[in-house]
Structures are given as C-alpha cells and as structure tokens.
Length: 244
Image (cartoon, rainbow, N blue to C red; front, side, top):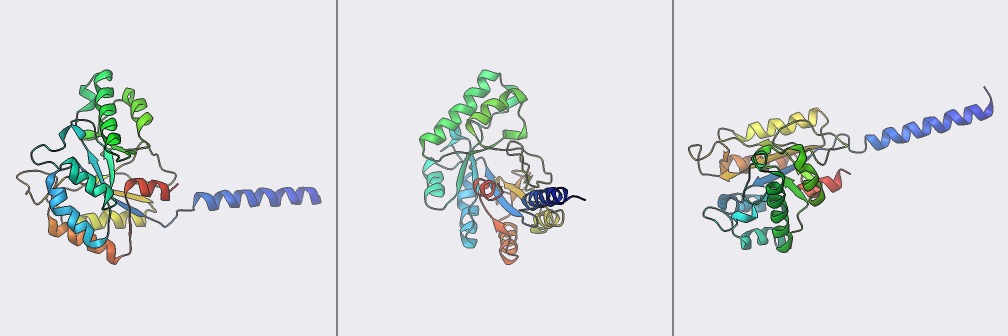
C-alpha cells in the first residue's frame, strides 16, 4: 500500500469520525418542553405559580383574537409571562380556527393577522401550534414564512436532526396521573430521543368540563419529578436553539 494511499485512508477515517461525532452531538440528552394552548385563565391562575415554584418557563400558544374573552387570559397577563417570567409566546391562529375548513385566503388572514397581533405586542412569535393539529399542505408556505417552528398534535419520537416544521407532542388527558407523563419522558430517554413535548390546556376544571384538563396536584408531582431527576426543561424556542 502506497504512502499516499495510506494518507488518503487516514483522511477519510478522520472525516467519517468527525461526521459521527457531529451526528451524535446530542446523544443521551433529552429536553422536555411544557406547552400550554389557548391561554385559558386557569393556566395563569393555577399552572404559572406551580411553574414558578420550580423555576420553569413554558411556551404559551395564543389565539390573539380571543385575548380577554371570558375564561381567557388578558393581553396584560400574557405580557407578564413574556416580559417578567421568561415564557415564550407562540401563535395558534386568530380564533383557534379549524384550518382545513378555511379557504387559502381565509387561512392566510387567520395566520398572518394572529402573527401580526403577537408581533405588535412585542412578543416575538417564532413557534406555532396547529389548532386541532390539522393543516392542509397548501397553508404551510404561509406558516413557514412567519414561523420557524411548527408543532402538531401527534406524539412520536423526536431525535436530532429535528424537523422544525413537524414537531410532535403529547397532550395531557383528564384521567392522567403524573406517572403517565413520567413514563413518556422515561420512554424518550430509553429510545434516545432529544425532545419530548407535553402539552396542557386547562387546570382544575374537572373532566366534566374537558377531556384535556389537568389536576394541579398531578402537575406539581410531575414537575417535582422532573426537577428531582435533573431533566432539562426549556421553552420550545430555547430547545430548538439548544438542539441545533
């Protein structure tokens, strides 16, 4: 084997080794994101104080057309989360619109007006959660022009490199105990996932009100478990930057 050929093999091996190191840069590291959809008042009254107990920041997906409505957070409360408590504020369509039921022009108006409203508030929206988890392909160019990160409503393993326009999540269900969410995080760890998103809607309203309500005691227990196991909890935008 010629000296030149040996050098070439060494260079190739080093290159492949470098690629392997880069591809496994986040191996063994899982980040948990806690997201909150629809700015329900119970999030501000119940969930936010518990998040503060543990020093966690969440991502709130807002329907700007519903701010201040009965049972919804006010713009002032959302502003407090963003400016004082370190939360991320993302878009969720103007009025929680079912996007497949809209024409392209109607969907663009809902998405863009919502984004403009959030921008005008100074909240720098970069993440969007699909309302009801559905969005026709024809609407994605509009979303991608205004948002960096898109979250759907399906739960699946998320391993780097991530698809920023197709992030999954697991919505908390009314009959859950903290153990269900813990098991999901542990499953993510065992499968080498880099990101687990768990979503919430309302708190302490009861299963009769909603199938996606969360008991505050179970919520606190879950956060306590995350803290005791030293699991990283970030906003969605922070996680995306960390996992680049």
